[in-house]
Length: 363
Image (cartoon, rainbow, N blue to C red; front, side, top):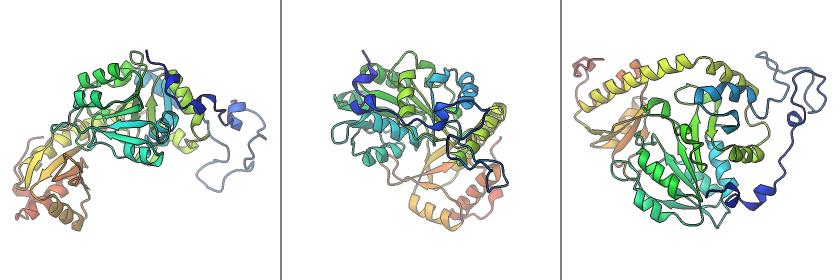
């Protein structure tokens, strides 16, 4: 039986959280002389930001909850997804004793957060087709494995992890938190694991406003989990972790969900066209299937291609030294014009300077 208290660090359970001025009085009307703010205003002409923001972002959570099909109490908002990643490690893992399990190739911040917090790392590579090696994962879990990270759709491979594998790990690892990182879920044709929060008390789901919502500059991440775990994350986070401008812009964005859906549809259409055109290039070996807003592409000589693209000021990510991604570049889907520029440069490199001679792809 999963019990959150059994694997939280003992001092976290007894920790008295910092109580901010906005925790002690949550109203919006009154004479505010409690937080040592500048009472006159701000030095910027963009607006008045002299008052501290809501430390728990209730307005955003109330608007977000029905969109995501969760309860307000199941939502934690962080400074990007990196904040809840770090907080989860700090809340559960005793340095020098506990460990976390990752499945490379995957998002690099899981390993960085483990290293920063002096937490041991267990690595169980994905299979060559970028799926979970379920039996190997289950065999690698120890009594000190506090966190198991699953990135789905996976970065950098772009594919969804098989649901049955995730479910088996959730059911078997009853003394670990299983985190499904869904940064790219809006580009995938599958339900979010947020629908399973009430089924699996050890499930945590991460999402972000950076990708489909187009708000990367705001640094706003979402964490969905049991109400008990959300309370712990709120207990240990900095008091004002989400700025007032970020909260205001996020509230505005949540009223534009249809715009988000339109952008996702455009990116998916462009992804298909880009993938087909890349496959026509002589230097391309494999364009891996993608459920995200990027493509993992294997070239005959990835370093040469990467260097040439940089010379032409076309910037992609070199993943060729990552295990199971040998010879691969990760290419984000850009605008139509950006995608055409990428293809033009690649075609030039193959000895043909005329983009119009690329095979015509409908769509």
